Length: 92
Image (cartoon, rainbow, N blue to C red; front, side, top):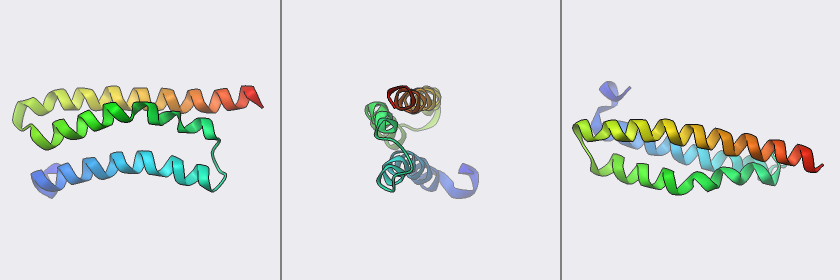
């Protein structure tokens, strides 16, 4: 996708995807579709902010570290989300 969007477009797409990952759970919680504990994903927000800073400032091979960081963030986000859902189920 980055080839089609260009460097700036790819960076904007990356940021938009991250924003969506944090906005959608809040919206679904607000609509009563997710429990409050699903918002544990916000524990990963500092890592996401660091990645956005790296993506917007680094170029070339330095972005490879951001790729690895994105994988870590995805794992931590998924674990936090799952933990929130499991904890809510156990509490009820």
